[in-house]
Length: 156
Image (spheres, rainbow, N blue to C red):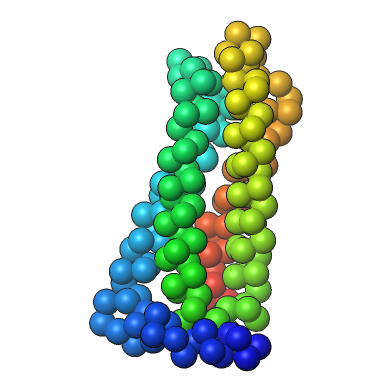
């Protein structure tokens, strides 16, 4: 716990919490990162579920690099926001669920990217396998849980 107390006393945490622009800048960056990451993952998942069939699976595979940009933006902005109230967040149920869903969502995204590298071209001709559909649903569920619980942090 002493690390978290120290983290809250850093210049970054004080700028975010007490500065005029810190919180709004980091929250705005977090919203943009969220839109990029989750929007891309939802599009990929929708395509893996059979929607937007005119978009080649190989193109979806290339699109995933954009999701990683959003995730990096959210790691930086999220850490900045976390640092301002670290001792509160580590005891907040929705925050803990959110972080768990994000970590699982990132692991799933990494796995999906590996699967798409090897199977995207065959999915284009033979259809998406049940494994692909399962991964798509898992992505939708995990990222939805992260978004919903992220909003609940302030209220529960």
